[in-house]
Image (cartoon, rainbow, N blue to C red; front, side):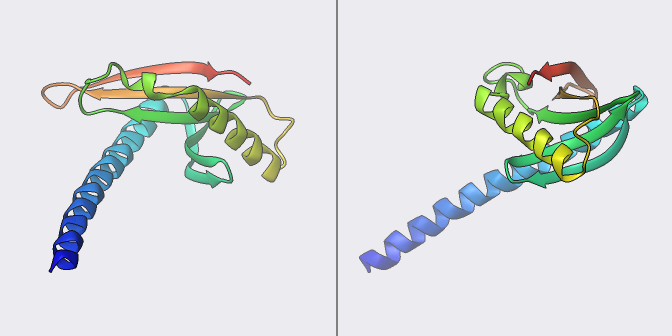
Length: 140
């Protein structure tokens, strides 16, 4: 009986965590679509999304004039701890640089000019969105 209760409690906790992950994933996908549209309206040609590397995932890859742009998208539904871009930690920055270099090497693009941008989104009232685009936000 104790085993069954512990298992039932564990299952409830797992479902709750899985629901949070699903909501987080849905929010991230929504933000990436909105960010891609925003960037395209501002002259960036999106060439790839959700690119996996050994160091993590690159949300968006685009071309802005002659530069290849690796884009980290941050979306928060609420501002409990400040703006979305604050969540780009030093560790995340390191992973972004390593991911970009891995992509460049794999695709024989090491000679190409490139940068890493961060786009943060914050939904406002009445279906409006506040965008912040930090060009060259993460330096090698």
